[in-house]
Amino acid sequence: MFIDSADALSDDFGGPAKTFKLLKTIVNVLATSRPPRSRLILPLPTTSPLLPLLLNPSFSPSLVHIRLHSPSVISHIDSAFLTYPPLNSASPEPKFWNILIPLTRRNEGESIAFFSDLIGAEASCVAEGIAEVCVRDKGSRKGIIRNLEGWRLSSTEVAERDFEVCGWHEVPSLASLVVKLKSGKALIDGHEVSDGS
Figure 1 (cartoon, rainbow, N blue to C red):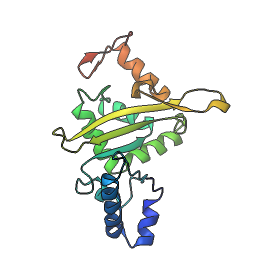
Figure 2 (figure 1 turned 180 degrees about the vertical axis):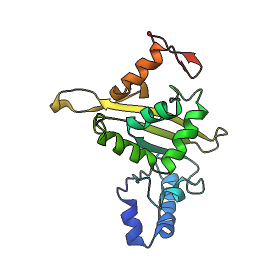
Figure 3 (figure 1 turned 30 degrees about the horizontal axis):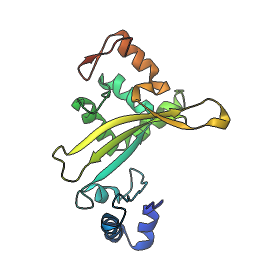
């Protein structure tokens, strides 16, 4: 089930608390329906008053939460804090997440992306991006697993403007960061980055 404007629903329905109850009822119905793998999809801005309520485990013990970021946020974290994202979730980099998560909560990532576009950085928000994927599984002892994915245009042909999933290090506007990491033989997740990786 896809609800394209939960905030508008909240305005019409009487506020976040009443909307939360309605959405909780929908989640419970979906959990008991057939097929059992039904999902509720709610695209929300980071400023939505519903978001903190929906991220709480009392709403649903299982959750996939995807936050979208401009590649300029990753570049900013690299230049300002001298850290970079992990290549895989098997060995996450706590320092990176300890910077990105508060940045996201304060909505600073959107400001960084906007500012970098103003000062002449390549405006690549439409053609590529970064997705922070957070997964919480019912009954899992691991808590929330975080990973970064990238997306980019799969073709430069206007008629074939499809997107493809890629690693964050394959996003075109982050190529200079990857080259810098490779040339310095930097360590990513404890593994040396070499020209052949």
